[in-house]
Length: 375
Image (cartoon, rainbow, N blue to C red; front, side, top):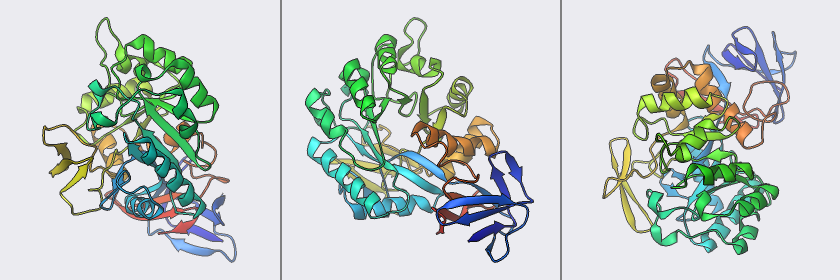
């Protein structure tokens, strides 16, 4: 039994500086005014303890791209890299690729979860069922419509959560419904669909939007597009990249005003450069280079980000003009709810898994816990 003491803690009911968090095994056992007799006391030195970050869109880190080597070792490196920046749960994300690579990625995630690799919550399959007009950095040669014969593959993971990003015009409403019925979380993205097509996907069980505003049909006066559908849908979740490059701060604030912090979640869309000194890498033979803290292809197309979740929280606070407790919710409780893990992750409260992050006065990560084990 451990008792985390002497910290400013963001508990489910709000901030406390007069409590201790008691951890037994993988879970939070209690929140008490004093540590229990016999508990190992962990001094937080007055720092800030908040729920661990959950990132539903992580392409790579530590010099590794998931597409290049979908293996347990790659997942271990990516998860370990992002843990240094407060991410205690993530979905390794596979961008558009061949079906054989998707199969290998699903098998790798299953094996990683079976092996107990810390932080792996499932898989995000982003494409190839997208609209080439809104492909972004995805390779056009990999993009194709969703066929019924592919559904079994997308439903095949044995462990964790499966999130699939697709363009609604590249799939049928019935296919969306079949995926959802099989337990797959469906998110709309990389799409040029009109509002009505997006609405049909939502009506058939889609619950998310991938990096809202980016790579999707815009909101205009008489054509609401995917952006309009996303902002209007009260129960749908949307990921947002608060790196200062993917969105103007005012656009970010519009999304927050429309969706609220309980349905707008921070994501990084992180690439191999996170936690690495490398200034360039390849995606399907296409060179991506680092320009300051931006990642771009030769034509200037944004290619994911160098963002960390700690950086996303800071970005949300600065650009979104929100306090830490709101940005923290968008990085923990909201993605947990999107993944169907509310009640297990995303709060510091009895019964929740002890996934925690400790921040100093500048909001830099000092330490993390996953399932009660400290980094």
